[in-house]
Length: 258
Image (cartoon, rainbow, N blue to C red):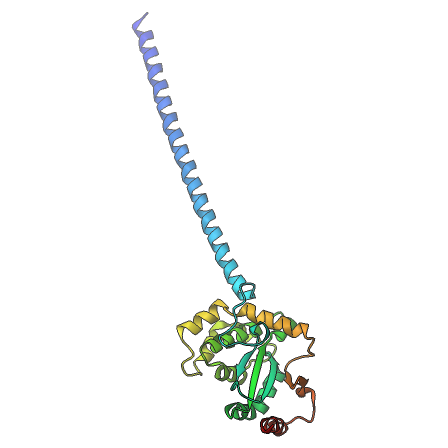
């Protein structure tokens, strides 16, 4: 074999070896990229799952589909009533209300001083039931969030004061401002000792949302005509067009005398 042929074969083998080395290197890079891409996909999927789960938790809390947590001191069937006044009071007023309801605000504005005076004197106990009637009519969230915040205030022993603040700052019925938890927390600043980290967490977590929904369902099951529904001795006295704060006071004081 000539020297020229031997050189040609040697060069061919060297080129083949070089090509094989390049192919192996390319294969290693491709495998590395595939593995890296798989890791990224897994991590990305985990992140997406985490985000979905977190949002699902938030939506669950926001919608009130979580566990039913009654506020501290709630009483009655299914612990749906928040009491204001002394246990020994001879009279009980049952009020079904919605913090977005203009008629509820009108009732509170007209009767507040009378109700405060009678409860402070130990002659009357009021049992408040919170509903979300306006939310249902407007596809809103403010009635639910405000009722939850009021229940959070009950946990802190500040229900009546915060209850009054909500009505004093009630937005127009067409404006769902109470859906903003930040607003509800800011309003808590008007009640001494209420705006604490515990209250803020309770509001943001929607701790009592499911309880509010259960109360709302009880309202619907009772087939009441609207809010406010104000019961005294089992009778809806707010439907009585002759009712006045003075007449209510006389009814309560008469019961107190026996």
